[in-house]
Image (spheres, helix red, strand yellow):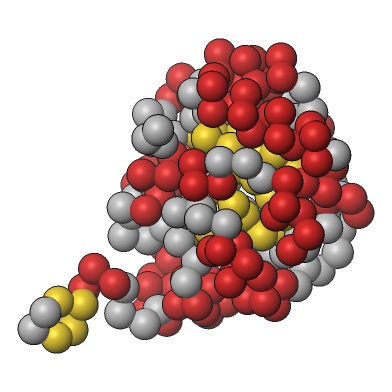
Length: 241
Ligand SMILES: O=C(O)c1ccccc1NCC(=O)[C@H](O)[C@H](O)COP(=O)(O)O
């Protein structure tokens, strides 16, 4: 089955999932007077391939935020919320999501298997987030899922500092599942860190707080581009362009 969300990320020049999130883990405002439409317009202008919308209430989100964002962009959207029931998948689709977060730390194995299968049946791409290797065992159809390593701990409401080394350590196990789209998410706070994760082999990154807080998001992104080793598409038979 093809996935608009995965396709967009895998073909992007700069494979960043940017995010509309109202509040950070400590309850501090992230939009700083901007509307979600302002944020989406800026992401589109920067060439974002897809957008995450946090509807989870811990981060100040509501389902209507997803509907509002879906009305103003054609980019594929990921809904980030605490999804535990099938009905929420159907609602996600109605609100305009292309992909849905399924958090392994919050779901028993049986629920994860049911929700991944049902999401695919509903036409949604499962965006399965893990924090440890044992959580990979419960993911069916991994070849149709995004598998994301969360560098923070959602059971602590992501109030921890995060650990990028978790993503580095887990990448071989994530790739072994057969996912076409390994992603590193959360706590990616500097362009150099983002460049390192992409150079290590991540197909995509989810970056929210750092870009929402950046004084100059274009400069942040330019520093990321400059810090990366040559992207694969620039390597030709005749050498590196
Ligand atoms: O991770 C979850 O389970 C979750 C559930 C419901 C709402 C939000 C959730 N996570 C949010 C995030 O993981 C972050 O917003 C995202 O990865 C970006 O992190 P950061 O760049 O550190 O702001």
